[in-house]
Image (tube, rainbow, N blue to C red):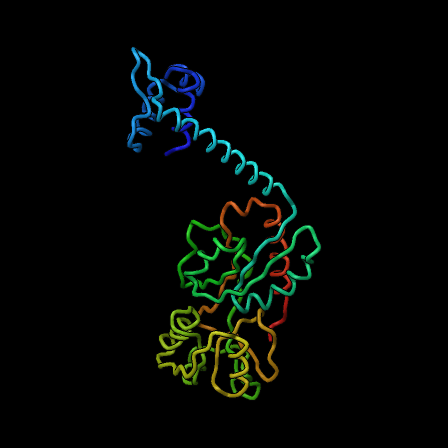
Length: 302
């Protein structure tokens, strides 16, 4: 059943004729008749009957029209609730983020939004493949998600707020001969053992591109998704890895060098359901996330 169709059925019972309904709704009588026919098509009992030259409600039609009053009342309450929430500068905003973004953004969010303030944040870590981030917007108000340039764009079902474009640099032990170079290319690093993410995560595709560019196979020795663990393994001599330039803390004994010839940049975006972007509390949170991202971008290269 369509709300507009129920509204017309209710108006027919109150006003007594199709022409009167059309006049009250400022549409044509044929449009009213069409909508009532569509309503009847989805209903197993007759809702109207002809009485002389007029269309009137049956007993079932009167009951459905009475129920329509409750439907419209509930919709009005829901609409007013949404309007009230949208106008409120208070409330809790739930934010989810993948691990390294949580490490970079969450402490600053906690400082900017104390629990006793008009807006507070509820934070959760969600380390997922890229394709699963948009679904998380049904559970969280804001989702910090990563996307690489070689991966598909976000679907139109979510609102996207770009926060940061972060290079991934080659990580190596401080004593490595490669640390003496300002920039590395694929030929420099392809012959070394590598630590990369599990299959299906986009960092692995960048490592695969090294083989294509250099013409030499890349030996993937370990697959670990958590970058802080990867950094500790690099320091221990387990292999080279691609690590985010800014969003994970420096690891003593590990240096990062830019990678030339292969585009290794990830985007960090804030995803929301479109209706949530209208809430002032969510807008305030997105503004703070922008400010945090700008501060992250100013961090020096390690």
